[in-house]
Amino acid sequence: TKQFIASILQPRVFMPTDSIVQEGERGFEMYFLKRGRVVVTSSSTCAPLRLLSTNDFFGESCLLGSSLSGATVKACTYCECFSLNRDGFKDAIAGSPFAEKVKVDLANLVVQAKYRNQR
Image 1 (cartoon, helix red, strand yellow):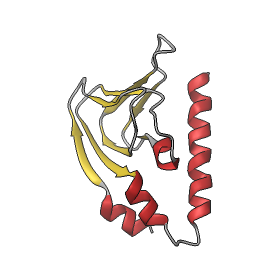
Image 2: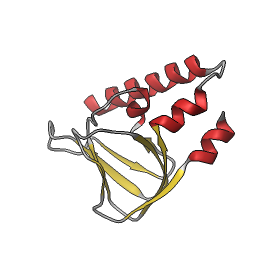
Image 3: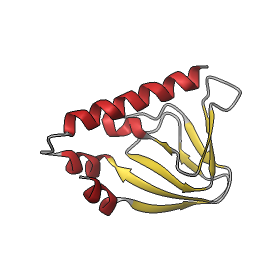
Image 4: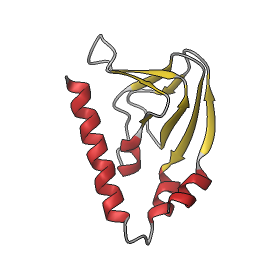
């Protein structure tokens, strides 16, 4: 499963101020930040929710079926990412004996991220 996921990751490059994810838009991809910094913001607060950098990830809730993005993510610097789309994720875990565990672990990450963002 890990090897399959690694084989379907798509490299993506973003320039400073590029909008990677827009709050309220449909989300279809999770992003793994290989290099760079991004800021996560929400229309419900004035201050940034989070600053993410190398080896962080975002957009994971879309893999579980969340259709609308809950925040905007913009590049602060030149960013190199890898993206994993929802269909690729479903294909990767289909038939795996670990599929449910992967979904539960991913759901826990989403809950933890939401908790961190509310502080």
